Length: 191
Image (cartoon, rainbow, N blue to C red; front, side, top):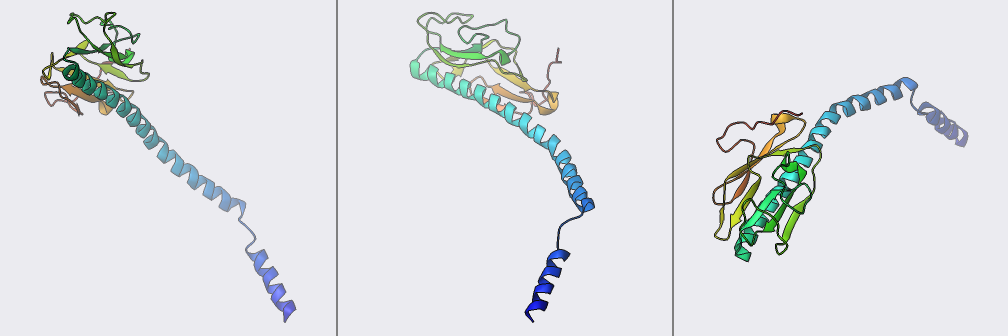
């Protein structure tokens, strides 16, 4: 009896002995198909994450400027800055970077003077365009922005992946997939 049981176990082990080359190639083909379908969606997810990170950074800076103006009792400015030390009105885009500072002497256009603190700064942002018709937004100590503004964030997807931050006259920023008039966002043509 022991001999037959041993022979059955050996025969069962040889019967379940592995996979054929064709079976292995079929599995690899299925994995390749699934991976090729997931890659574009993953790329879109990465673009969305990059855009959201920078939208949130500018949104945080706008909120911080608004709060600082009220708490300090001084106008607070957020402006384009290529060097993160001084406003750069001639910068091509807000993606060059920006700074937030308390503008104690109320100069216009805003200039960071020796006695004025830079509260926040953001360095250059690659692969993302941030455009606005404004070079700076000034928050006053009585909870108003000096001007309304719209910041449009565009990446390689163009208008299809664009987002905007819209600053109201009260200084409250909000995120939108449309402009302040409710129209689709437009991205400048890449140069």
